[in-house]
Each structure stands twice: as C-alpha cells, then as structure tokens.
Amino acid sequence: MIDINQNFKGTAILRGDALRVLRDFPDAVFGGIITDPPYASGAADQNGKQKATSQKYSGVKSGNPLPDFEGDSKDQRSWTDWMTEWLLEARRCALPGAPVCMFIDWRQLPSMTDALQWAGWTWRGVLVWDKTNSRPQRGRFRQQAEFIVWGSNGAMPMSRKAPVLPGVFRRAMPPFAKRIHQTEKPLEVMRDIVKIVEPGGIILDPFAGAGTTVLAAKLEGYPAVGIELSEHYAEAAAKRIDGYGETEQAA
Ligand SMILES: C[S@@+](CC[C@H](N)C(=O)[O-])C[C@H]1O[C@@H](n2cnc3c(N)ncnc32)[C@H](O)[C@@H]1O
Image (cartoon, rainbow, N blue to C red; front, side, top):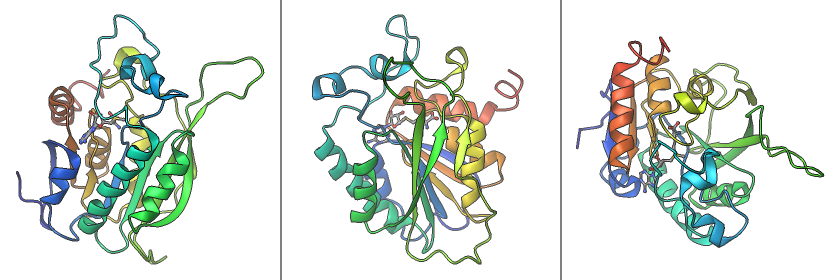
C-alpha cells in the first residue's frame, strides 16, 4: 500500500476492494472523488441483473473479448446500502468542500442520490452525459443519456479555484474496437469533469476500471489514485496510464 498524503504528486492504481482500501487512507486527503461505480442495473428485473456484464452492457453478446467485471448484480436495496457505506468512508478521506461526481443510469439515479445524502454529502445536482446513440425502440423514448450525480463534502465556496463547467456532455462512448473496458467512459468527458477539483487536489476513483479518470486527471495536471478489484482491469489501467502517448493518443 502506498502512502497517500497531501504531498502525493503522481498517479497510482491500487488493486483491491474499494471499501477495504478506503479504510486505510488518512482523513481529509483527497481533493475530489470522481467515479463510475458498477451500476447494478442494465435490466428491469433481478434475473436480468444476474447476467454477465458483457450481456447487459456491451451490446456484443458473443465473442466479447473484454472480460466481465464484478459487483454488478446487487439488488437495489443492497446496492444502495453498499453505496452509502463506501460514500461515507470516501467522505472521511475527502477534504472539506471536496466535490464528488458519480456516473449512473436512469434506473439507479434515485438510489444514488439517496445514498449520497445518507452518507452526509451535500447533493448539488445532476449532469447529463448525452451518449448521442442508443437502441431505437418503437413507441418509446431512447435511453440516450446517462447521468453524473454530483455534490460536495459540505460547503463549497464560490471562491474555489475551479472554472465554469458545462452541465451537459455530448460525446459517444469509445468505439468498441478501441475499448479496454466494457463500460469505458470517453476520456474527453472525464477531462472536463476532473476540472471541478481545485488545482493540486488529489483525485480518487474507487472504481477505476480501465483508468479513464486517473488518466484524465494526469493529463489535466492532477495527482490521482484509482482502486480496482479486478486484476485484469487494474493491470490494464496501470499500463494504459503509463503508456499513454505511445499508444492511445496515436490511435
Ligand atoms: C463501470 S466500471 C468503471 C469503468 C471506468 N470508468 C472506465 O472508464 O474504464 C466499474 C469498475 O468497478 C470495479 N469494481 C466492482 N466492484 C468493486 C469493488 N468492490 N472495489 C473496487 N472496484 C470494483 C469493476 O471491476 C469495474 O471495472
């Protein structure tokens, strides 16, 4: 376990369970929590939720080359309890006034805003990520957007050193052929979102996946720490962050 303190300047991907790893961090060390937890969604009923993530999310039902990820089949009550528990621990590790931003879909949006507030964060709003494409369904609205619930660890003075930021992000998911993770978020969107954190603040992503948040933080000049349970994705994230510029940028 590396020593995370106010002097930490680099980037790191830690492999482990978010809740356990969070418990080892000191109080009031992170400048912001920006993350994309497993949604435990992607289906209308509990049977659907139990399916592999490749079946629920990627749109590629067979021959999917990307490994499934864990933590995505909790029912709504268990998911909300679990979210509250790690959000409570994350708030302890966050500086006063630090922002929190979390991706979610429409089904879990109400549970996420409950968990955020139960854990003592101040809820400040919901941003829209317009994915620009989605499955058309006759007689229904497209589920074209996902959301980013955001808040802060108590008061958030206007004098904070952060720019004016958009409330809607319009950007397609990375093309499947270029994805490292089944539910990888667009790097450009993450680069905009991390700017809510004051310069120099250490950014924490407890569910790092392919490391998009940590990479975005690095590119925007922030120190950052990611936690990832899957060995495969923890390694992929670390490799991606170290190798960016040689591979992804050129692609
Ligand atoms: C939605 S994905 C994140 C994708 C990421 N935003 C990206 O762009 O690649 C959520 C990740 O959380 C990881 N995860 C699930 N449960 C976890 C836990 N208890 N602790 C840490 N990571 C966990 C999964 O393995 C998965 O990679």
